[in-house]
Image (cartoon, rainbow, N blue to C red; front, side, top):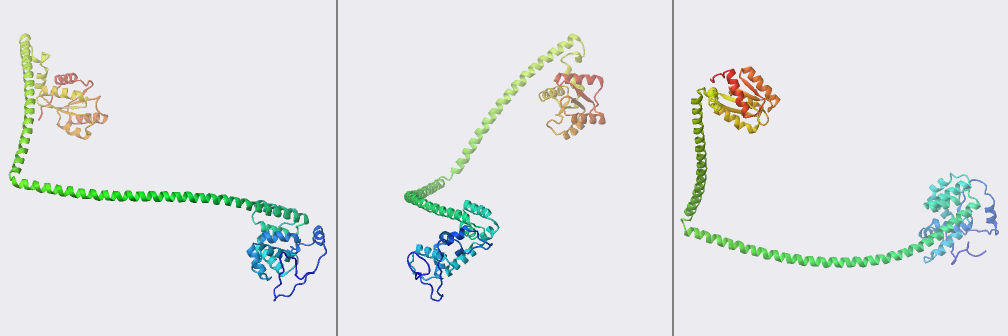
Length: 438
């Protein structure tokens, strides 16, 4: 038997002085293979030193980090500080072949760390169920170290499942190495891209600094220009104040300047009034000419009427042109209210009523004027003429009710022309005499 308790790669590690020397026994070659090929009785989970020795390397390498493993081994084995990670790994793997203090410490750490996964895998009662749980963990890639420890130490794990798990974890380690190399290549590419981006960033910063310096120069130039403009404005203000002072001196030197300005304004106003009066005089002259022409026409018409009466010897009412004068005698100052009617016929209505000597009032029947004003018109009227087709229904019934209540004569027109109004007044005059206005 060699002097050291187990095989290590790289040297000999003496056990701690305070711990007693461990006793190791040799095993016959092929004993582990025979034990693996035969079924294991009982349902007890296996310890770390109970699983085949070739599985210790994946367990130690996958389940422990380098620094964590270094700390756990320092509590049980004395080794130099500059010992490489590989020597520590192989030493821990060799210590797990039998039940040693280091193997017990590693076993306790694995049981404590992966107790949730151990409970989850404990639900499997046979190898097939355990295999399905392991496949699921491999596919997801989540908590793979915990699944590895819970599967290999499970009592239902047979030799075939042990080999499958070993093959899977072996290939996963190779893939991780390949992925690490790919990541290193990607890292190099990213570092090259990062360097290029840094150069672009430096160029952009340089450009920004140049633009900032240019903007600073432009700002300084604008500030100088603003100062120059302020000085120029101050000079103009001083010049304007100087001109205002000169103007005041001129006003003081000409005391009658205000009076002259007032006279000029009065002359301008007088000229404007004269222009207005001239225009008014021209308008009045045109009106006088119009009245003279109308007077000539009326005189001529009066002569023809006299000749007609002398020739026929009839009453003026029989003549076709004497109706307005006779109607005027009949109305004799009475107030005639016309409710409704077309807008273009209002002036004709007014002329007919005034030619017959009456006073004309008009209300549009509530189309535009307020319907409340019609009561005052009805109270002032002696005769009401209602345009039945040109007023609202409310106005129609209001006029009819008011005239019926007060007993005022009300004439209803169907035709909205001025001739229809004239005939209606003549017809009402012949049938009933209008009451005298009080």
